[in-house]
Image (cartoon, rainbow, N blue to C red; front, side, top):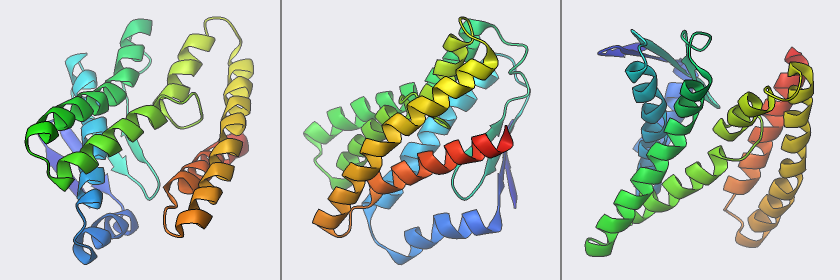
Length: 202
């Protein structure tokens, strides 16, 4: 299933589309709608920066556990342009966090509060120097100036596992205490799956 908006083409797998839309239809919860908006804002940050640097079109593939942007100009951009593309997503979340926080001060509605919190969490999570996050990609680019590609990959994998352990332990603790909050545990499992996939692909 494909959706084209201007120079941006978005492709959804049927399974990912069902998993994304089903909770929105079944639950009247502003947290899920806020989460979707924050993710879209994050990806639009990357896309806007890519287009501003000369990409003619952007192809996005929405999969079950991640969103892949086909970056056809990655090899032709400068070092600083690459960094700006990577940081554009977290920057968009940080900007959204600030805007929602300011508006919430005058119009205290749940949706704005949820968008504020989720944007802040997405910003912090994506800045972690681990596999599959913007922070991990940023760390790779910087480290490649000092180490070989093989060494950089090893550093990212090791740092990912170092961060995964407290994530998983604390996430399990929160889940056992709250009996419903599994977000931190899911984040740890997501990072673990990304690292394992990279090791298999090497």
